[in-house]
Image (cartoon, rainbow, N blue to C red; front, side, top):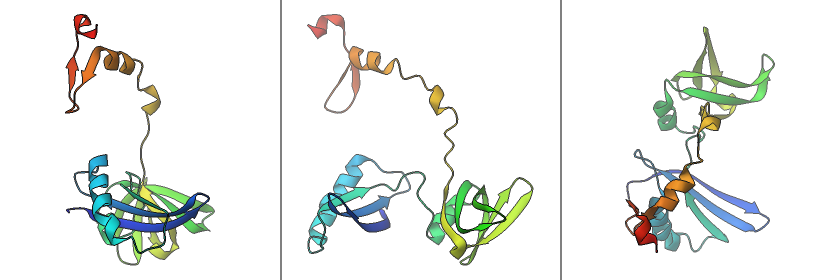
Length: 164
């Protein structure tokens, strides 16, 4: 189907057992892709013991797990959480400069840090949310009120005469 299987998890929660499947593709995911995969995979997993099946994108801050994830993230800012503190810190941030099957190298300012991958509890892209609080959403309701959404999800102008 052209999707990359990123992760599968069976999680027990108060409301039941959740079989969670995370998929991705280079162009990104949308709800229609998740629904398409859900319909295709559901008959194949019906013999497993779960109450709810969820199919979703892993998100932009998905943890790096495979060599392919690390390759895709070379040169990007990452956040690393360690199992044990190193130099009094359990969390590090820096640019992912290199990786091997056993290590990863971060650059933070002028410092270069090499870590064992097995010492890392989690490595994920650092998402910069700077400025998100400044986004003005006040006009979004006015746009929705002044426009009509068609079946093709296209927004078309609606005149006041058509509203009646």
